[in-house]
Length: 280
Image 1 (cartoon, rainbow, N blue to C red):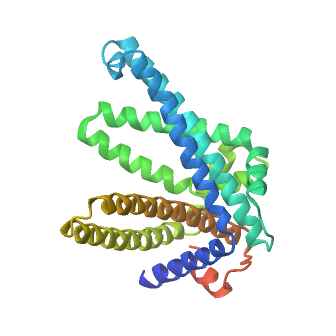
Image 2 (cartoon, helix red, strand yellow):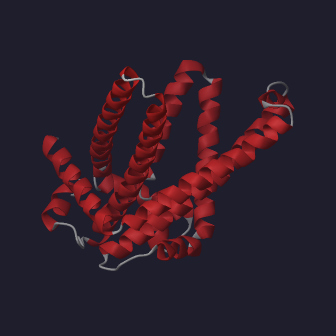
Image 3 (cartoon, one colour):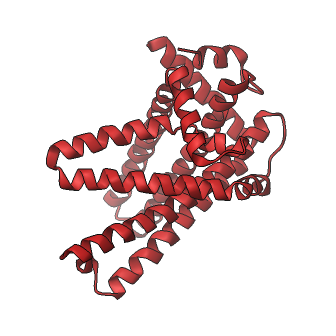
């Protein structure tokens, strides 16, 4: 297990090297984040304009309306997320094939598959609403079941986006193929993502400790205005770390899918790829 973890973590580091060559890949999670905020605001604002969340609180019709509203929100939000994720993966695949991708290249790839992306978003929204209903209506056991089912869904659909990017197939077939690849390869992407989360988490902890230390030092010296600037820099650092982690995940996903399907390593070390993502 330790060897598998170290190999997958080595693949994460190789993904970081790809990001170093194409820093513009971080633009995709930035655009995704901005779009997601705008979508959330566009859904929340009408609710408060109409009287607040209590409009969904009572009555069967109100409950039905809440589920319809929730489904529409999931649908639009997932479409935005999957679209920019597809753009990121598409651009990363160009780099892995030896090309030099641009932001426009990634957006063009995602735009060509927008129909399948919306279909996948509709399926994901439906699954999300079903899991939400199970969690809300079945007590503690329902929450546990919903959590386990949600985890299984996340794992088996992990490679759906790169499949949609590279193949002219519908979302259902893409989900099925993602599940088959996951079973065949023993789910190494889980270990790699754990390593990625662990590394990013350590950086976040270090950044927090440094920022808090600086703030405490300035507070002891009575530098109130400087503290505001440090807090702003601290928040900016968190945003950059989140963008870095999202871009890294997209590259990692693209690399795993490419190797699983073709056996090609591109700019990655063949030894690392061979050890980090081997058949079950």
